[in-house]
Image (cartoon, rainbow, N blue to C red; front, side, top):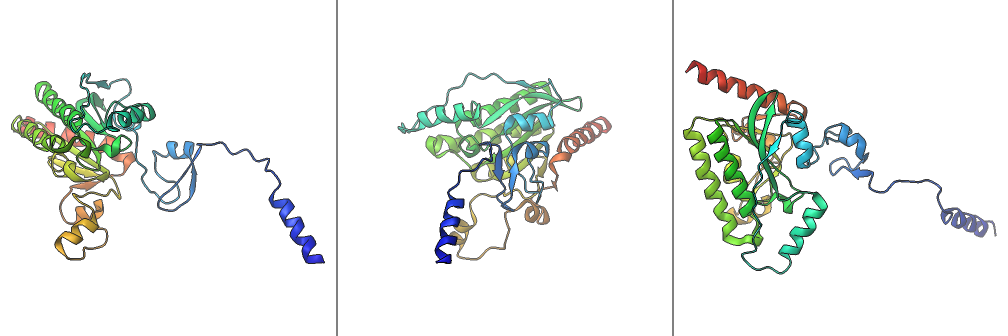
Amino acid sequence: MIVDKIKKREASVKNKPSNIDIPIGKWVKCDKCKEIIYKEELRKNQSICPNCGNYFRMHINKRLKLIIDEHTYKKFDLNIETSNPLNMEDYTKKLKSIREKTGLEEAVACGTGKINGEEVVICIMDSGFLMGSMGVVVGEKITYAIEQAIEKKLPFIIFTVSGGARMQEGIISLMQMAKTTAALTKLDEAGLLYITVLTDPTYGGVTASFASLGDIILAEPGAMIGFAGQRVIEQTIGESLPEGFQTAEFLLEHGFIDKIVERKDLKETIYKLIQFHKRDKEDS
């Protein structure tokens, strides 16, 4: 019958091997609009979806290139090994695997650099390293960077992205909240500028400590910011929460952050804030 012949023809076409060569690892899917994007196009657009404007997370090196003047970044060389206080069997192996995959030593990189010629101390967190979680090494690196800012009398800038304290290091990771906060108190007493830039996502102990203590708190568009997730909060308080209550836009409206800045404008905005602070100190 004619129907059988059509079915056979469709099967043969379907099983025919394709001659189209699609390179592996060259494409990425946008979580927001679900469009497939060529990675090179995404890179040229500062890791922002060209279709819907969704912000992708940035690797530390890309962030440094975007914010810090070329050839001016000098990393703080701290010889600190990540400990395993709970003796978790897979923790050490997991750290080794992530380091090989990301090329990062830890979830934060700290050092000095220049922003349009203005020298600063800068820390940048990376979600690719255990979701930017804050363990002992992260806390120590940030504290050391703050101390260097005080010693050198420089503005302190930090880009945050984190799921919170690192559960693999137990209560010792929670102690980093107090340590970084104490260091920031000394920075404030020294009259030095502290700017935080909250990127997606910034949660947990990081939000509850140094991320929320900036003299000026900036955020990228659409960044999710909070302490715990919506479901956990609703279960705890027994009430429904407003839609999007943890977005940067909602927090700006309710006075928790000072300004939402597009990625392309971040460097210039931070530079202007540094200039304003310098003039204010000179006038006082």
